[in-house]
Length: 94
Image (cartoon, rainbow, N blue to C red; front, side, top):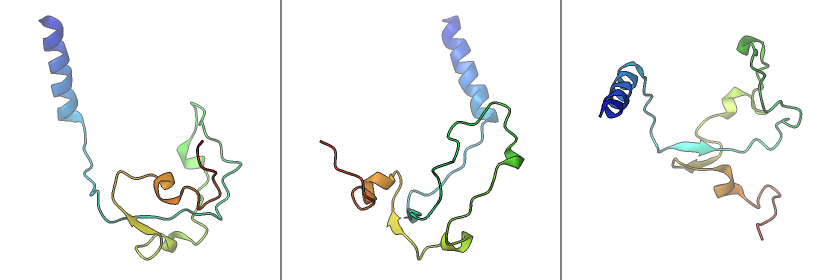
């Protein structure tokens, strides 16, 4: 009984202090940036990374390329593979 009370209390406190960002599932645009340079990107950041020192890599078309005219319209949840598998050179699963 006491553990149930503690769990419920923890959930209640987390809900009071948590922030929820609501985003729409509709009207997202998926655009694979096939000219982007990503091969040398570090995938796992070290624990002592300074976010202000990380490089900012804009899309190859510039930030203005991120608009509602480029890409295809998708509804979330969505993945790149769902819409572009095979079109970007991947081989089908066997």
